[in-house]
Image (tube, rainbow, N blue to C red):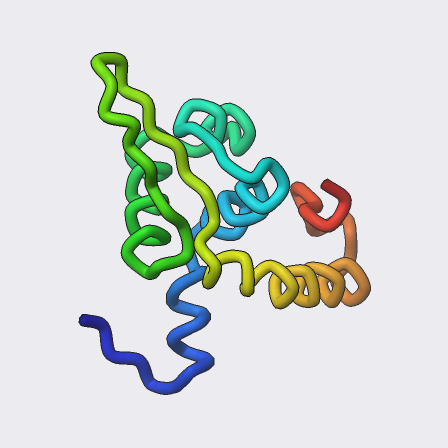
Length: 113
């Protein structure tokens, strides 16, 4: 089990990663998502990276992976209660960035989605 310097460090380590916040926002918006849907929405993420980030989010208890155990692979992800509780915090960070960061420096705005 991971050890953290403090509560802030624990939270930041759970959401750090190039695609984790986008994954969390996508699942918050859609309610659930399959791997391929998430990959299409995020676009520039590799299969391996998306799989790793999903696994880390699951391990940290922010998302739930549901395997339907069918002959054709069918797995869906959705936010856990802990994941849902992070969304207002991420919204506040998004709003701060939208207000205080030059928009020319931002490739993709999540606040507008």
